[in-house]
Length: 156
Length: 175
Image (tube, rainbow over the protein chains, first blue to last red):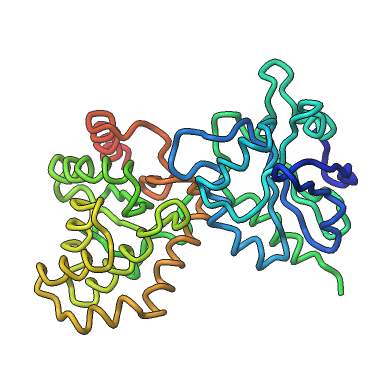
């Protein structure tokens, strides 16, 4: 798993059936990369639904969130519509898990992304990362603490 | 994971405020799991009596439960007329019917001053209270609903009645 201080590798993945998103498009913004195992977890308030609600707190810190799993773009589209998500879900689908592997968070055995969080600064440097047990929704408190920590260390 | 901020006079507290066991729920009025938890809390309150105080904080997941936030505001509006828990109960007992017209009907049933209640439903101050609850939940590590805190610590165990009441009861001996 890539550690803080590392430059986050760029990537381009599908976010919808006809649109691609590159990490480099977010330069000048902070980015939260949320790798997760699969769409359609069976609980209210799964991790992506939670981040959908905490977007307003992320935005206050100039941060955007991106969800990444190995689900295909059509699956993401349906999931995103169902949960009314307001941030992109990217399909790390072909070759499967390539981006997750680049970040060291692909579970070869399950063929899914691990549940991992990265917070990148405006220059695309990883400033905080966290690997959660796969069955545990890590919530948003760690991300918010990391963003606040970054706010407090910004040198003017 | 600990509760931030701790329970204070700002909270709605049911039961003995000096009780040794403090149970806080972060809940969403439109969440079916919270609806499932509702009678279990009542059972725990019956079983533990004045040993238990119960606090409810709002954690509406508005994007998947579009009526949850207004329902939360309705409970806060009822609180301004000293009927918070009465409204809380009616809402959980009628989770399928949380449109504005339904909420007004519940307010009538509770004999609230309707014009005042209606004004309060639109009050930015009450929305802020709901939002503050939500933010405190996020800060405390709430990741879905319901999430419980027992004596300030996040509770990760089962909340089916038998397990939950046994666990809560065991907190008395700990003190």
